[in-house]
Image 1 (tube, helix red, strand yellow):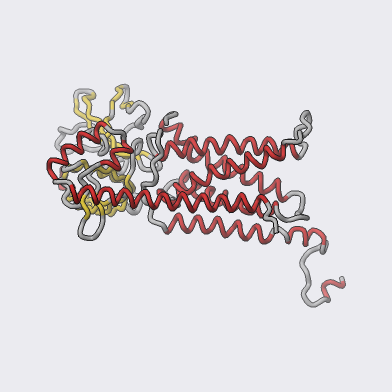
Image 2 (image 1 turned 90 degrees about the vertical axis):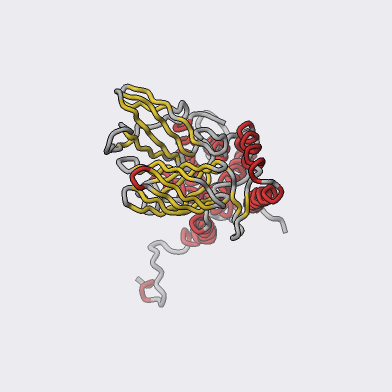
Length: 243
Length: 195
């Protein structure tokens, strides 16, 4: 019996999809295994600085697989030394970015309006406990590919479960002096490219009121605040930019 | 009206002929629906990994996909053009003998390219609904593969109504354009043409 060509096309498509899915799964589990193996053999502190230098020079793709200080947790999750996580909080009330670079982490929450917070903290074995101004705090667990936790900003608690991303998605920051005041803006670019940003028009004010940030041009990394052009810096775990 | 006295009254006004021809479409349409539903349900239930295979020479999976989707669109445009010629809709061009081969092979290439993109979408990102663009893209992506499957199955059956293939082919083309506009076009317009 002869199989007609449209059926063959479909079969080839299904076979290709299956093999791609398989190689995606293998790639993800290989990354986990590499990170776990590297962690087992590396002695922490010396390797941490070496890896930071090496991955700053390497391309982002290399940095992902060659970073040498990952550690498996008791629960079996593998903890990458460098990772950018971004995503929306539950209920679509804002977005959060968590960037882990070796022994330091930066996080940002904003809703594209008045609610925003910058947080800092120290990662410890896949766990983050971070703090920011005005009582902002964030707790999270993170592992290869995803992070989940809670962030509290201005007394409101937001739950999130977010995924790892590469440039051009991620977290961007801009600090500039505009009209005599120091402004600080942050943008979160989600995995699908949607951006959300808030801008604090005077970081030294007693009670600063944030507003929506102007749209960040991701090709030039600039934004137009009134008639002033402000420049943004990526906060990127893979290159260490912004740390 | 004798028909109304018979036990299971058929609802059709003009019986038998168009009915049986359209019946051939039932199985391809059902299989197509099943494919679209399966993709949507998998994309919704599978927890997105955010990571997949890295491809050498590109800065991120998103750029790879934007370029591959554009390649698929290019072949789809060839599909559209060649089908117009095949159906004699372009008055000043009479269909050359190789037009069928061109149509089949451009279709195969476009399909294979879209499969590679779709696997990454489903595995790393999933079916998402958080804004209109993403929702439209997710739905159109599932429908595209359903429509394509239905068209491939419809090709294998003889005696289909004449409008079936142009309808399914046109639908697949329209969906692909929609998919491209809500992903690659949008990506390039935000991030610029980058590798």
